[in-house]
Length: 507
Image (cartoon, rainbow, N blue to C red; front, side, top):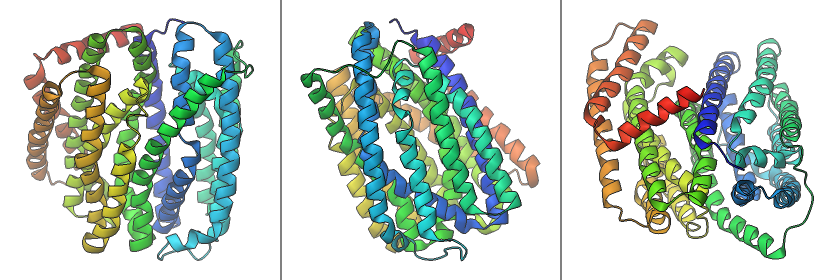
């Protein structure tokens, strides 16, 4: 089957961005309602349980990524029998995974209170709340989750975005109603349980209609199953490392600093993560296309595409960092008040963390598309272990600042150099110097542009929403003009413009 990579990527990005915008604005409203009606401790609880369940999701082992990768070639050559057999194997794995998560999650129940230092709301039973959140996770695996692999492998994540947009509307409406009328956090979680089931069922129905010939039946050869299992084993370390990195900060803050501090941190992280979500849409939209390209195109063509992707991402990151520098503090002040504002050094550190996260995400997307899990299997684990150790040490000396700093250090000195080395030695087979020089230029441009934005915004002190709007204009225009002026003659700039125009034309 011929996959129209540019058209599908454009469609995925459009609907993915629409969904992300929706999933940011409405949860932001709910977060605000919860702060003012119920208190920040509930936000801390929500973040803590999310992190705990991310750890439990280690049972997934990266099965989804391995199965989607295994479908790239069968889809390219229209091997329907093999695709159906892969679906059957995927379904079996996910049923087992759901059961494993349920058993391990139940076993961990007595230990949950030990992860909270203080500030537990008096009307909350931690055990009941944890079991409800656990049920949401288990259900996500048991109800037709395996059918998502067809959409991912065919580069049709826009379908998932459309369905999720509808089901999330129901969820958010009911959850806001519950918070406003009843102020009942248990009911808030129960609504999520039912809408998760609805989302899975609707997506399964849509997939069945789109791909009626694909049914979970047949059997793969034992050699292929062994190959897939080896990929899953290799992915486990990546899954473990990513989970430790993403969850350790939240759990350590809760255990050492309490739920209130965790909630204040999460307000800042929520904003950064929201922006990350938009960029993740770009990565998820192109990963299947990259996988298809790696199978069908030359190394030179793939390397040129990689340089263009890197340019596009760094261009976007520059604008985002400028917005963080100029808007973080005034936005937090307008949103929740001066009481929940962190020192400005946290803003700078969040910018550095954001840049590292997104660059690493770009490189990891190429790695996943190329299936480089075996050669990359130790990197995530080593990086995450260093991050966890630094978290526990630095939190006792630097408090919250040490938590964020530990993540930045683990990325800069371990994860990122290791990851980019693997890509160039195994995928592109080229020296790193030229590419690193380009990335260094992009970083320098971001630094200079952010400084300009900082000093300009420093002189805008009229207060209120008007100040925020004026600073937003500065944060968008300055990086746009600086980057266009400095980078307009680069080949990657010209090619990126061409890709954008083709996407718009095919809309």
